[in-house]
Amino acid sequence: MVIIRGLEESEFLSKLYPLLERCFEGSKEDKRFYNLHHERPYNAPAWDYSRIALVDGQLVSHVGIWSFTMSVPGGFKMPSGGIRDVCTDPAFRRRGLGHLLLEDALSFMRSKDMAFSVLYAGPRQFYRQKGWEVAIPGYRFTLDASRITCKGEGDHAFTINETTSEQLVHGIFRMRKATNAFLWFVVERDIGYLERMIDISLQDPNQHVVSCSDSTGHLEGYALLKVNPRNERSSVQILEARFTTGSATRSKGIIDAFLAFIKDRFDPGSISVQLSPNHDITRRMMGLGALDRSSLLTGCMVQVVSTRVFLEVLLGGINHMLRAQPASIPSTSISCRFIVRIGTKINSTPERRPCRIFFNLDPSDGIPRFELAGGNECKEESHVPEVSMSRETFLSVLFSPILTVGDALDEGLIQAPRSLHAVIKLMLDHASWDLEPRDYF
Ligand SMILES: CC(C)(COP(=O)(O)OP(=O)(O)OC[C@H]1O[C@@H](n2cnc3c(N)ncnc32)[C@H](O)[C@@H]1OP(=O)(O)O)[C@@H](O)C(=O)NCCC(=O)NCCS
Image 1 (cartoon, protein in one colour):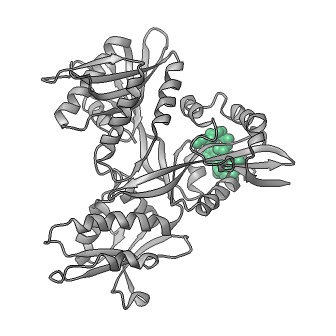
Image 2: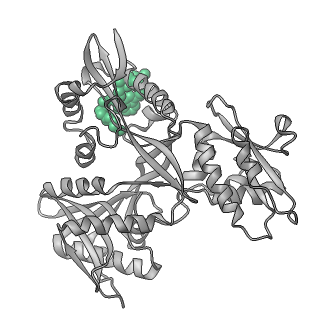
Image 3: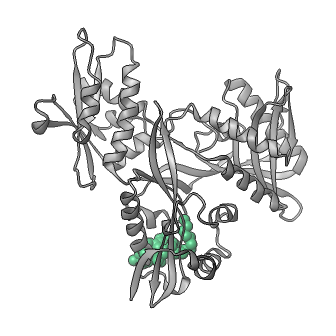
């Protein structure tokens, strides 16, 4: 008999922990993330955020949910759920338990009014079957260290150190906050998470934190590295990196200096990074001739869990942005039938012709297609869909750096009359997760 329910505190050390150890032993999973996540109730308000399956009383499968907030502009917060530590005892695999738990996790997240879910996928197909889509693909880029001939820094003075200092954590925290300001969707992390991440990284003798500061000691960038000794030449893997986004030349100078530092300090045969092609560091490494293995290795996968909450928050941010538009763009407000109040509140000024767009969605949260319907408040119930796109397209234009709104319109992936193209672009381009180059998700 299969029972699906939330974990109880007494089961953590005696039952769940051994299962996690068993399932992740020797797997390709990054131990760092595993170590970070398996302590409970980290970022889980209660023990039942760990969903478990018991077969004849034995705990054999697990899906963990961590609670976090995504930020969108205008101070709008989106309650969200990350998925972690997904595993089934090897003796019980391929019996549908993993999928049962993913379904349970989705209803659990809905019951907590979580709007959005993010995970870093190993077996993508397994998650895709339950509605997650790849939003930010991660590729592995490998750079032959002999390609690094530059010293970097240019005119800019800064120093690069290997450091273990506690101040580093605060510096990284400040830096992440500053660079996050450029992004629409941000996973907010607290300082405790960073402390633990650095702590765990430094416990591993093969991991190193390298940071870069200007002459006043202000942090300009950092990287977490893993050195993999292999025969005579080691290879260095950049696990995470973030650099100042102040100016493109400065950022390029810092990245070059980082690469030169890694080369001098560890003398690796190669340096690799597994990230989306849109990150500053991947762009720079490609510029230096990094080999893109051209295979999608992993990826950040996302799913809209509650359309109602997702749109309430997203449209709040979009309307905030629309209000700040210059007068040449028609005053536009965006609403959906669940949140008509947002639309009516943000009305146009008398001299601008009001143009209203309603999201017309299947209220059941089963969202095979997103449709936008033109209309006005009075006719809200009888609007005709004018814009339509699949859920996959919607998620791709919001989150993937590869598909732009313009391309999606040109290719007919978003069906909309020409007259609405500008509005769609305005709306979705500005909502894009990956519009700005960035260093780390
Ligand atoms: C991934 C995992 C949790 C799946 O658990 P499970 O209980 O066997 O999953 P299900 O039986 O519900 O699988 C349903 C379907 O998902 C797909 N699937 C499951 N595991 C998969 C894998 N490793 N790779 C690709 N597809 C997979 C299959 O299509 C499967 O259907 P099928 O048996 O008809 O082919 C389990 O294999 C596991 O614990 N792996 C090791 C830990 C791990 O990698 N966790 C994921 C971290 S992101």
